[in-house]
Image 1 (cartoon, rainbow, N blue to C red):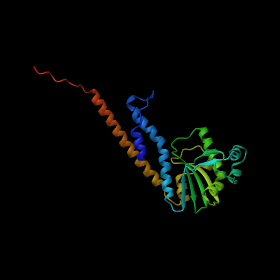
Image 2 (cartoon, rainbow, N blue to C red):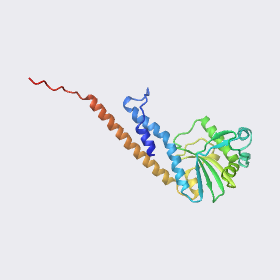
Image 3 (cartoon, rainbow, N blue to C red):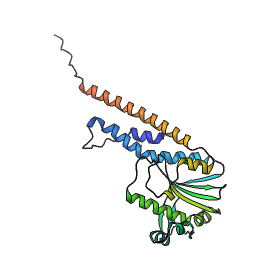
Length: 233
């Protein structure tokens, strides 16, 4: 969060044909902050979950989806058939993806792949299709991946989107909300998210106020008229 605020403080002003010049800086800061908020939420959940003793959490692990798995997901196999299937994983074979979080739950003997979204607006259809495809592929190779890369045997695997504020267009089978995660992991997450949002909002407000003062001072100095001292005699 501190690094994000420092980056926003140095953010260059970009012209926009529909934004009044005096609003360009706050507009740029806020739009960039919205993009950064997803990463802050991801980091918040990562820290909250890894503090729970029975959970082992990995952030953006590199996972390769074999072509055969992609073909199966793109084919006519039913959701039920995909849910009950487990396929072989081979590292560095196929296309590379990096899910936001991988949670290994010792109590459930389970692996959960999570994509963390702000959930303030629904994604477009193309992005939804790609996200859904990736989640189904992850579910198919989860057990083999966890065993081959982490040396852990699991009996259950899930893959879903956690839209913090609720808006998502992925199918219901691939959705999970904060209350569900709290119940699943027997840990508190929502308070950590609320605290992160409050702190980020506070720092943003301070930054916008600071930037506004700087611009007001610059405008004031530009408007000053320098009077030359009268020559003696």
